[in-house]
Image (cartoon, rainbow, N blue to C red):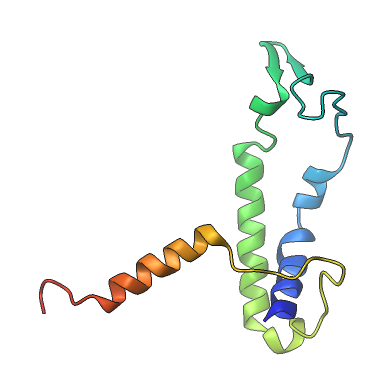
Length: 116
């Protein structure tokens, strides 16, 4: 499952329009926490830590592409799952926030409904 997860993320998330959003110059911070970085706009300065780095339209484009790529991947797992991904990435681990949802939903499924 670890290799499948890395392959799926590389093929379905990393190699998407997200790469275009990631391209370009990234600011340097002498403070180290970016509190010294500001973006100048016609409406004034925005502190870097308050800046949204992706627009609603970009997020929509990204999510549509990721859903389509995940759907394609899941439609052909025997072909695409054989492509190694993220060979130098850390080993995957269960996401704590998502596991809370799993536990909550598993607990709900185990409880009898009020109509039983």
